[in-house]
Every structure is written in C-alpha cells, then in structure tokens.
Length: 249
Image 1 (cartoon, rainbow, N blue to C red):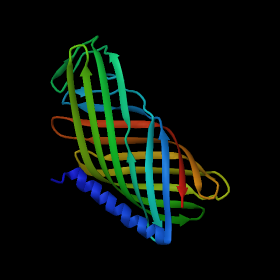
Image 2 (image 1 turned 135 degrees about the horizontal axis):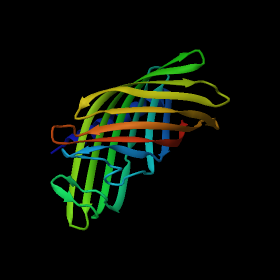
Image 3 (image 1 turned 90 degrees about the horizontal axis):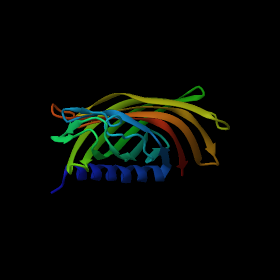
C-alpha cells in the first residue's frame, strides 16, 4: 500500500529530477545550508491547552536546514527545503496539567519531546527593479508536529501528532551590490490549507565569499500549525538568529 507521505516524497523526488535536469542544461543549481538556534513558543491543544515553554520547559534547539534551488537562464527559480527541529527537556514540573487523558501532578519528573518536520516546495518569480531584486514566492508546505510527554514519576506516557498541508504566498526584496554587503527582507503573510498553515518572516544581510559562495546572517520567525480540529491542534512559533552558507554551481 502506498501511503500519502510516500506519494508526497515521490512527487518531490520527481520535481527534483525534472528541475535538476533543466537547470544543469542551461542554468544554475544552488545549495544552501543554514544553522539556526531558535526559541520556541506556541500552544498544544488536547483540547486542554499546554504551553511548550511554560508547562514543558522547552526552550531552544540547534537546527540545520537544507535548501536546494534550480534556475534556468529564463523563467522562475524552483526550490525544495527541509527542516527538522526537535526540542527536548526533563524537569520536575511546578504546575499540574493533563495531556491526552494522562494526569501530570506538581513535582512529577516529566520528560518532554517535540519534533517538527517541515517540507517546502516553491516557485520564485524574480524581477530586477533599479538596484534591487523583488520576488513573488508561491509555496506548498507540509507540516508534521509530534509531542510526547512522559511522566517518569507515575509511569504515564502520552503523545499527540498533527499534520497539515497548505499553500502560501510570499514576497521578498534584496539589494544588488556585487562588491559589498546586501540587505534583504522576506515574508509569507498568506497561507491557506487543511488543518493548519505556515507563515514566516526573514530579514538580514548577505555578502559574497569567493565567486560562487554567499554568506548570510539574519533573524527569522516561523509559525507552523498542524492537526487543527475540534479536539486538538499544535501551533509552534520559532524565532531566532541564523547563519547560512550558500553555493551556486
């Protein structure tokens, strides 16, 4: 049996092969690796609401994102992005709560894990205006968020997983200076989907390192929603500084 996630993986793989062949023949392939150390906030509904930071003690995580892009001599840029942030913490909780039918009492030792998987497939239309580049960005986003809460003291273990699929509309602006530092800003203010969506913003500076490498330093935020329904949902907000190194070849 072929499951939905397998179909999505096959679609992404087919797009990658198609776009790679097109770009390799007459364009550019780009690869970006990003190191990010964001803070987490948000809400986990079961339907009782939990705060991942205040209730579970989740705070920061070290994340490495990967983004592969393809652009021919003419036409838009295509890209695929994957990120998999995970947050972990073990602590004696200072307030009681319930989660998926399990009771967690004040003073219990609780181990919490929250894992996010985000896949993004996008098309970016670019236009040069004066000494800057303006883009309109169309994306498909798949979010998966799994939360596991293990009460070590009472031997109670519960978990919840939510998923969502959405399409987004975004915009970006970037200065064009071949010999110095460039500034940029981007945002996805509109997202429409099933059981949640994906929004983001991103500002920073970038400069060339050699002929094909680009070094970027910035600050960004993401809002990922998954599993929205009458009985539960998860909203994850990530914010923090990042640095990445990109290469075109």
